[in-house]
Length: 317
Image (cartoon, rainbow, N blue to C red; front, side):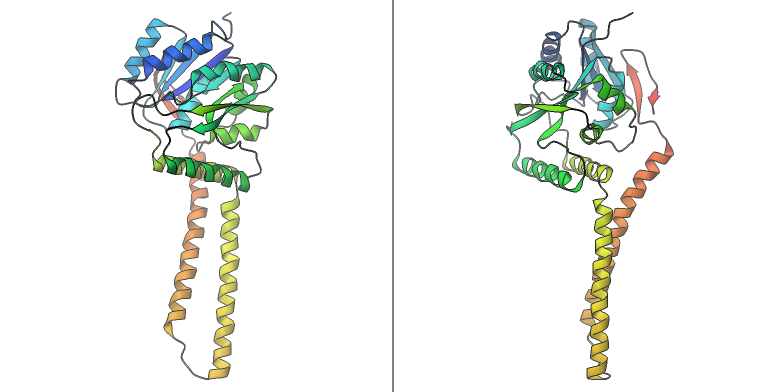
């Protein structure tokens, strides 16, 4: 029977052809210091350059390098999920493929895991070479999410972490399509710790997380772990009702004190537009939740594997 590796490293990549050789070299050196049988799983999330060929070349050099190539771009969180589903290790490290997260930190994460922690986060002490707006937006988002949810999602952390196999198996039971893995792992509630590090700029290539993708991830985090938007819609409803009640009292008072004086159209237009705007906001919030329900009910595979080092070409629910 094949011995289970002590650690699996899952790395999603998208159009990272130039980085792959250095990524594999540094990562394998780091995890090999933990266990000679450690494995690295590269998940190609529908790259359009030579990323897959570069991965296959590394696989030919070292059979401990495994890969999963998705049939198209399913997104960062789905790519990580595909890697987690393929991981065989007693512990699993998750790391981005742009080398902003240093693989040399993994042995330190693993040392904390051996002390008895099921989740060990890599917490950013500083975000070097990051644009100001991204630092600012990330800081606001994580603090907002922590304030409106009942789960403790660590501040200043991304997906770079190491989890035990116990956490991996429980995480595998959570098959929702709109995934926010850092929130799902926090929701499980296992014993956690963190290691501080400085996050550097990309080694090569272009940034893959656009403003639209970041907004989508933020929306998934908020809607998956908080009912605050729905409560906000309820608050708007009560507020508008109160506003309308004040207008009714004003209309009655004007009728009594000023007889048949016709009120101006300005107040009518303002109140109509205000109420209409709030209604659209509330409908939009409800629509977001309904859309997520619809996606779950369809029951489509979370991702589809085009090919892999294990010869698997099936979708996974």
